[in-house]
Length: 373
Image 1 (spheres, rainbow, N blue to C red):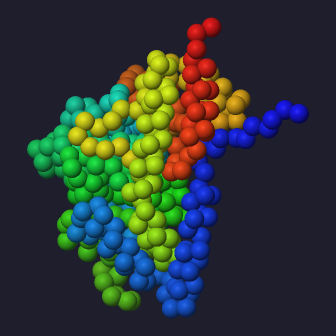
Image 2 (image 1 turned 135 degrees about the vertical axis):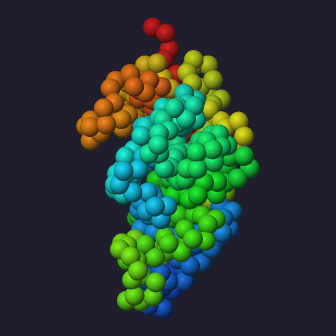
Image 3 (image 1 turned 120 degrees about the vertical axis):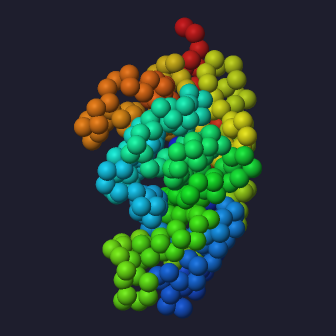
């Protein structure tokens, strides 16, 4: 009888949930007993603990990562007619948030190693209408924040860090989310620090932004039933805050686990003749994703699928070339580094506690797919 080979999932959250289940259910019961569900004690405590971890004065819990970007832009006064420079090689929410406040996304090219915004390309995109830069710390690799902040200071631009994929990464000795005017985080379940639904956070060292964002997330209210502006309903759920408090206590261990998996991949793929993920020159990688550059990407991905191994193609088409942005006038070849990346990148399974034998199977499948002949 042939041996049944189990699949290698792209992400497996079940073991972590099982480890946390009893503690989380206890926290849910405690919240229910208190009758506190909206902006309750878990949200307040988590905001304080999160701010301490990131190294900022303020952290404001919101409903999701997209809202964290929109509310940051609104609080910074970004509006119709303004331009915000961002990356075309990321999830749609980064540019979608810019459009949501009436501004125009301007796409700069990316660095070939980090996949993050290229500061030289950012500089070339600045116009009289530019009001902000929105760098994304992609896949867990921090963007070149020293250079981006220098450009922002020179041109008096705001900086909104999109940290959705990079909780715990550092740049120049600082945790991402503590460098720009604001940092935006997502707690979508697949993230380094994820909840069991949707959730987000905004970090800032500016008192004025903290006060403004807290109003905006709660219908523009300064007190119950007293409103000074049009806001929205974007509040981090009390139950999600409870599980995030539990997970925050062990997140450094989770980050170490991701980095161990990444190092094991690096070792096993060293002779494959491919580009494994670069590391920051002056920082640390969070490895929300482990993303390769492959000369025959589609064939390798099919080989993984044939071997029951999960993978992800992030991202198959640059945002600047998608139908929704045809009116901006970008053409193929406009951002060549991004466009090449869309044909070569493939993300392999990575998560804390991933079995070494699974890393070995994935690596063997990649090596075999790239072997001559």
